[in-house]
Each structure stands twice: as structure tokens, then as C-alpha cells.
Length: 607
Image (cartoon, rainbow, N blue to C red; front, side):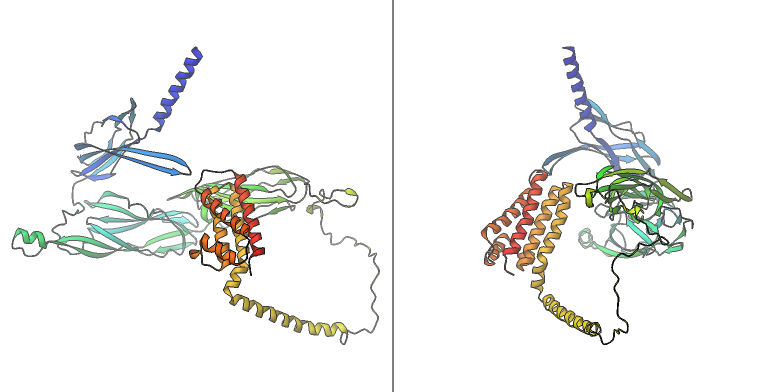
């Protein structure tokens, strides 16, 4: 009895703990405001709560709040239903004295439990010349703003870097006027590898700053990650931005308050602003480069592993090399792999996971997956793999070595045997060497003797060798003319290539079948079959449908059975893309059915 009560109590406690873990209560506000200005302090909660309490706000005055709003969003992804609920509590505050202030966490009750938010840091700037809003600009004269009212800066996070070392280039707009639009003339950066860090789908982030006693609204307009590819002093040309500024212009003469009201209007003023050039000093990497250096610069790490150590002849082995840390991941060359001579090595499959940019470069993991195939049985050792990179912070190369990997390769079912049933798989390519000064084998076959005073000129072989180039030229000319005629017939060429293109596309769906990507697999099979029918029937893909495809196939003497199979495959793919996940057995069956149906269609359709 005690055990049952204890189990129930632990279960209930775990539910409360999980429930509390799911609650998110966050606070946000502007990072900087001007003393005396009003601003919003917003709290967001993902569950229904009550009794929200703010901390003591000595440096701020609460003008209004909380105003509460509610939102609920439901989404269905791969058959899974997820719901997102948000409760928002908004306060209007007035900034007090200048300085750096912290608003302590607020609290709210959720299911009887008290939950705390995060603290918020706000910088209060000294009251002075402020950015204009629409009301403040109502009596503007319509002239272009001065350089004190609107200017831009372009700054590099570093001015002295090594070749391949990352640095960030940030463009900011300082404004005291209303901006409608901005058109940038970016400098050419041909000496660098460039990664744009600005998310164009989101609003431009802005804050408040004080410069020379004037308060500005500061907009982070552009951020780029640069990797210099050559050494020496590189001058980055100035950035130019053309702004469109909206100003409200009052009439110069007014007879009444009604005239003033109706005649006032807005006008757009253009102003072109230019930044200063930037000089970057790029230092070369040390000349003595260690073994295993492939261009990596930063603070990096490396690991190497294989998926299995016991295999059979001709089995595939995956060698995975991960390069992680902070650096120039995207410009690192492929590692050099040294394998035993009895292994075939294929080009790697390269992928990047969770790469994020900062002023120091990319942080994340770059993965190389090599496919190795052993051709002979035996025990093999892959020597330690060395990876070298240059660390700018230390100013020298660093080398990381993996461990040696031992692989046991057993003979497969298809190994060939020599006479007498002796297996030859124990003889590998490393045993066969050319010894230049060794004694040659004695020739045991009968020698071929040639009579004396025999001349090549005038012989049958001589005349045949004269006619052979001319005959070959005529044959190539005929083949070339035939190819020209076939290429001129676009429809014929598309028809001939239709089967090859379909098989090529189905190869990609075979890869998706192995990885188990259901939706992508069905989409690729559907795309391959429609593309094949479009090329084979000479119908543009935009005009192709099940109805006209079926009619044309009937006219081409294709059997009703094959037409029905094609329609079933199309229906299966369209339904399976949005249906709940199915097993790989169904996907494999559909793949084989598609290949078989295309083969039947090739044999029946009119050419």
C-alpha cells in the first residue's frame, strides 16, 4: 500500500515539474530610451496566468497597464498537431534619470505556482536633441537634413587579420529624421569571401545612442562576415546609401486655420550619404605549413570515425570526419585521406550543420562522409589522420591527430578461386611490386621468325594502312551527319533521352529511399514520372495532365494495363505525400513498380 501511494506521489510530482518546465514567462523592452520618453515594457506568457506583479520601479514611472492580449495558433506538420498560446501584458513606462538601469524579474501565478520572468536592462540617455517623429516634423521646411541629422558608419570588427581569418563589417544608420526607404550602393568585395548575416525577412534592428550630445535612432542596416583571400593592405571603398525622407511642409501663407489644415502636405526629400573608406591589413600565414593543413583558420577541432570495423569484401564503409569550432568552415578544402591500396575511396559527401556567423567566423560543424570499399580480405590499419589549422589568437599552426583504425575484412560470397579451389583473396595489391633488376622469366613459347629482305612498303599491310584513315574519315562523316539530323529534331532527341532522364531521377529517389525521407521520396518519384511522360509524349509539362496523357498513350498503342499502372503510381505518390508516414517496404515496392512500368512503356510506345 505504501509503495502504491509513493508511486502515485512521485508521478504527480513529476507532472507538476514537467508542467512548470513548459511555462515560459519572458520580458522585453527597448535597449535604450531618452530620459522623459515613454516606452513599452511587454511580458509574454505561454499559458494562462493570474496576479501579475511588477517589481519596484524606482527609476521609471508606470503610466498605464497592464493591457492584456491573447493569441492562439495551431499548426499541423507531418500529421502532428501543435498549438501555441501566448498571453501578452503590456505596460507604458516613462524613463526617469539617465544611466544604466535593470528592471528586476516580474512574477505571475500559473496553476497555483509562482513563475518569474527574466530581468530587463535599459540604458536611459540624457535628454537632448531627439530623433523627429511625424508630429515633430510637421513644421519642417522641406530642405534636406544636415550631416548632423543623418549619417552612416561602416566599421570592421578587426583591422589587422590573417589571411582566411574572419571579421565582421557592420553598416549603421544614425538618424534624427523619418526615413521612408534606403537604397544601398555596396562596395565591391572581390578580395574577400563574403557571408551576409543580415536576415532580410525581419525588420532592421534599432536602438538609441548619444553622439556628441545628440540622441540618434541607430539602425543596424547591414552585417557581413568577410574572409580575406589575399594578403597586404586592402582598402574597402565607401558605402553609399540614398535615403528617401518624408517631411510635412506647412503652407507659406494661410488665411485661416482651415486653409492651413487643408493646404499642409507631405513631401519626399532625397539625400545621399557616404561613409569613409576602411583599410584592412591582411597578414600572410606562416610559410612552413604542417602536414594536414587544408586552409583552416580559427579555433577548430577534429574527430574521425567509421561506422563499422568488421566487414566483408566489397562492403561499403563510411568514414566520417567532423570539423567543429569557430573558423572559416566553408572555405576549408577536403582533407587528404591515406588508405591501404586495397581500398577504393570515393569523393566525400559534405554537409554543414548549425553554422552560425559572428565577428569571429562560423561556429558549427562541417562533416565529410567518405565511402570506402575494401576489395580484398585481410586485416588493415588506417593510419592516424592529421588535421592542421592556423590559430590567429596564438599566431601559429595547431595539429590534431585521430587514432589509428583497424578494419577486419572477411572474404565475401562472391570471391573468385584459383585452380584447385584455392582462394586468392589472401593476395592483395600491396604484395605485388616491380623489381627492376630482377631476373626475367624465360620465354617458353615458340619464337616468331621473319624471312630476310622483307619490306613493309608495297606489302598488303602497307596498302591497308593507307586506306584505313580515309575509310575512317568517311565513316565519321556519315555518323556526324546522322547526329546533326537527329539533333535538329528536338522532339526525337527528347524522346530518346526520356528514359535516361527518368532513370537518373529515380536514382535520386533511391537515395531518398535509403535515408527514409518519405515526403521527398514520393515527390521525386512523381517529378521523375511526369518529366518522363512530358519528354516521351512531347507535351510541355505545364500542359500535361492525367487525362491527355492517358489519351495519347492509348493512341500510341500502349496497353490499358500499363496505362492503369502509371495512373496508380501517380495517385499513390500524390496521396502518400500528405498521408501519415508509411514503412520503407511500401516505398521500396513503389520504386520497383515505377522502374518496371517505365520499362514496359518503353517496349510498347510508338517511336
